[in-house]
Amino acid sequence: MFGGRRRRREAELAEKDRWRVARRLMDEDVTVLGEQLADLHVDTLGDELDHEARDHYRRALEHYDQATHLLAASTTAEDVVAVEQVVADARYHRAAVIAVRDGEPVPERREPCFFDPRHGPSMQDVEWTPPGGTARVIAVCAADARRLSAGEEPLVRLVRVGDRWVPWHLTSGIGGAVDAGVQLARGSSHGVHGQQNLAAAYLKQTTDGGSGIHGPFG
Image 1: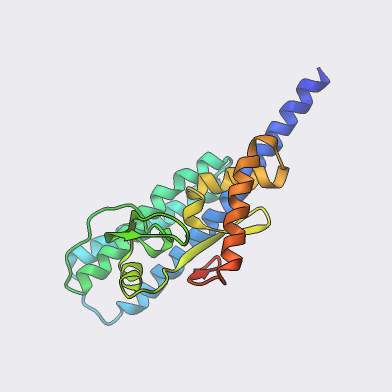
Image 2: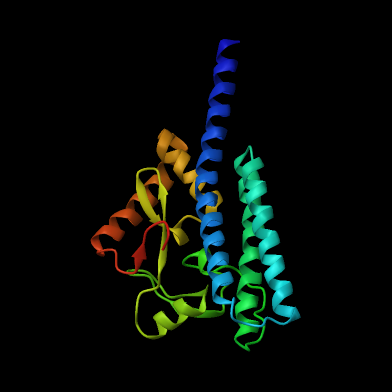
């Protein structure tokens, strides 16, 4: 009987840990999104936005408000992960406002930038070879595409997993970062492989001198 209670208590604590990690990461995303929308407001004060741009602007603000409310009401890691799509929708509509304002075509809906979803939706597919790795095709934002074509390093988001800063694209999104963080914190046996992978990424990050890698807010 006592063993069953202990296991239930441990499971409850593990779920609470997952929620805390997920909420911290998503809070960073929502905070940056709010700052980006505030900057967009300032940038467009002197512009006469047409109906299409105003509609995208309204939708971006609505999705931002929805994301803040959903995050505040969340009680599980799964609740928080569900906010990712709402934030992605807000980022898309923000990108659409900028495109319409600048006389560019409205971007198609694509996955977020591979290196940092806060860069907004990806704009093109490029071939990229990580240090010591093999070439692969990834979807990146316009700014990172320009950096890569110029031979520069992309702006890579780092997220804190346990006691390490790990490149975003190694975590498989918020869900992956949550699970890895809980495994590292608890030192669970089933997380040993993940710990080794994350530790290797962290060591490579430090030995590479951090080129192109930036902290929580890029």
